[in-house]
Structure formats: C-alpha cells, structure tokens
Amino acid sequence: MKKRQTWFTEYQTDSLSLGLRIDDILASETTEFQDMLVAQTETFGRLLVLDGAVQTTDKDEFVYHEMITHVPLFMLDAPKKVAVIGGGDGGAIREILKHPTVDEAHLVEIDQKVVDAARKFFPAISVALDDPKAHVHYTDGIEWVRNARDFDVIVVDSTDPVGPAEGLFQADFYQSIARALTDQGILVAQSESPFLHQDLIRSMKEGMKTAFPYVTLYVAAIPTYPSGFWSFMMASKQPVKPADRARTASIATRYWTPAIQEAAFVLPRFVGELLQ
Ligand code: SAM
Image: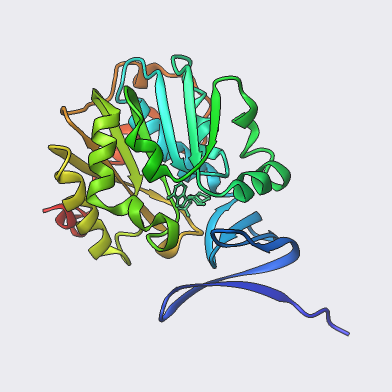
C-alpha cells in the first residue's frame, strides 16, 4: 500500500499557500508566545515554523541571514556593537560575527524555546550563539531597546507583524532604536514581500521616517517566504554608502557579494514606487 504523504501548508494570504511535503515532525509545541513546529522536508531540509509561518529552512536560510546583516554592516568601516531583535534561530548572529571588528553581538529574543529548538535542530544556523562575543537576552525587544545605547547596527529579525512582533513594526519602536544607535548607526528590518505586503512596507517607511531622515529598501530572492521576493528596510541619520572594505572582503558567503551590496538597492519600478 502507498505510504500516506504529510504536507505542511502555510496559508500566506486568504487565497495563496505554500506546500512542503514533510518526511518527519521533529518537534511541535505551544510556547508561552507562539505555536512552534520543526519538521524535516525533502526539498528544503529542516523547517522552522512559528504560528503557521515559515521562519527558516536549512536550504535557503543563508539568503535571508546574509542579506539582513552584511548589507548594513558593510556600510560601516568598523562596526563594533550590533544587536539583533528577534532572530532566535541565531543565523543573523552567525553572519554578524564574520566581521572581525564586531566585539559585541546581542541577540534579544522574546521566546527562549525558539533558541532551544535552534540549538537542538539547527546546529549549523545557531552555531555562533556560544561565541564569547554573543550575548543572548530572553526579553521583549521593545523594552530592551529603550535602555540600549551606542549601537552601530540594530537588525530587526522579526516574525510577521502580529502577536509579540506587532510593536516591532511601529514608529515608537523605531524612535527608541534611533536613540540606541550612534550618529552613523544603521537600522535594518525585514520588511516582507513587495508583492503581498505593500501597505506594511508603506507604513514601515512612514514609521522609520519619524526617526530617521534616510530610509531605503533593498531586495533578495527567498523561495520559502511569501511570493519568494523579499525586502529589507534600512534607515540611518546620515547618508550611507558601502565602505571600501565591502569591495575587498573575504568573508565566507553564498548569496552576498560585493556587487550585490550595491545591486540589491536597484529596485524594480513597482517596488521603488512603494517608497515615494
Ligand atoms: N527570518 C524570520 C522570518 O522573517 O520569518 C524571522 C526569524 S526569527 C525566528 C523571529 C523571532 O522574533 C521569533 O523567534 C520570535 O519569537 C521573535 N520575536 C517576536 N516578537 C518579538 C519581540 N517583541 N521581542 C523579541 N523577539 C521577538
């Protein structure tokens, strides 16, 4: 008799879904903050899902984690102090610590269970969380940022804007981040899909503009995120341009290149129009 297949389906909108055949369910639990699922898939390796939404997979995590970190870090000559809000899988911390000048990388994750699952099931993603330069805080990023100061880069690596992450998309949070950054400091936040989340992108831009004069967007292809085409919003108090070291860097990456550092900001017309 043919073995019954099990599929994971993410309902991305009321009329669009992503289906992945799963070979094994490795963990399924309701934490204090969200429903969490870890599964083995044929196409993308291990899969982490929170509240029904794909967070990361073994096969395409490198795109998101490299692009949310190296692009802002390579705008600076010598970033030293960096924070990630959310990002409990640890992938952003792994990439940040590839920059030799960074001496403090803080991970501020509300849900310790996500970090525990990442350590257990995603060792290649969470590999840097035990680095002496990594500092893990289990608390609400909105509260934590209020007392943070002198950061060179703050990365908002959040879930979708519902539940505990809702406040991570709002103007007063961006204002706290502006106070937590140096004058040359940079904020970057995952800003969802230019095809599917246009109102959110517009409202994030409005929110960031209340605290930062310079707000831009860049894009990357991430197959397991809704529409496969993803955006990142970057904000700063001063104009930014790639540091010279971005052209000669020899850090190990699979998506980011010196050319992508600049090319990622070249936007299709309909995406550029979202910022006008
Ligand atoms: N790359 C992912 C994506 O775009 O789907 C996000 C990955 S990461 C797992 C997102 C994390 O943000 C989750 O683990 C969640 O617990 C955390 N998070 C949500 N709201 C938060 C808050 N207010 N403070 C700190 N962490 C938060």
